Image (cartoon, rainbow, N blue to C red; front, side):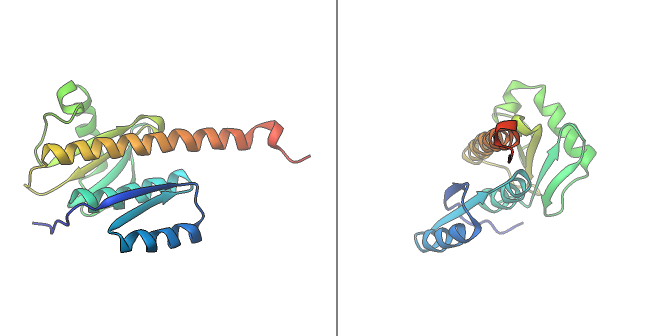
Amino acid sequence: MPSREEPTRCLLLLDTEVDERRLISAIAARAGWSVVGAQDQEELVESLVAHAKRVIGAEWAAVVSMDEGTVIAAEGPIPSAPWLLAFVAGSQESARVTAGEAGAEDLVWTPLPAARLALVLGRDGTAYRARERRQVAALGRIVDTRFRELARARARMNHPSCAPR
């Protein structure tokens, strides 16, 4: 059975430089807070997997692409990509499973619709509590919002009016 740390309070940083994030992380750590931040989608996905696995106390965590059918990022001994995709696809068919009210006891997932991804976490035989399922859903909503913000920022940066003259 994996060791489970008690979840800490988390501070989500958006649009911070690496040096700023390090300074804020050091200050926050003294107060018992963890810091999660990301500048782009790749960094956001990697941060999400590491943070979710640690805070929720999962044995493994993975982010899967619903369009490509691949694992984008993972930590721990994850099931195969086809198995993860089948689990998410099957779970989407039930409103109760999607809401986190039912489903496999040792698996939890949340959609990230803005990026067409899903976060899936698992333990070996240890059931997730309702509070943990709600935490994963909340984390998914936060990260999905960040994906939308990154897409808007990228669109603004790529707009012809922003091009150098």
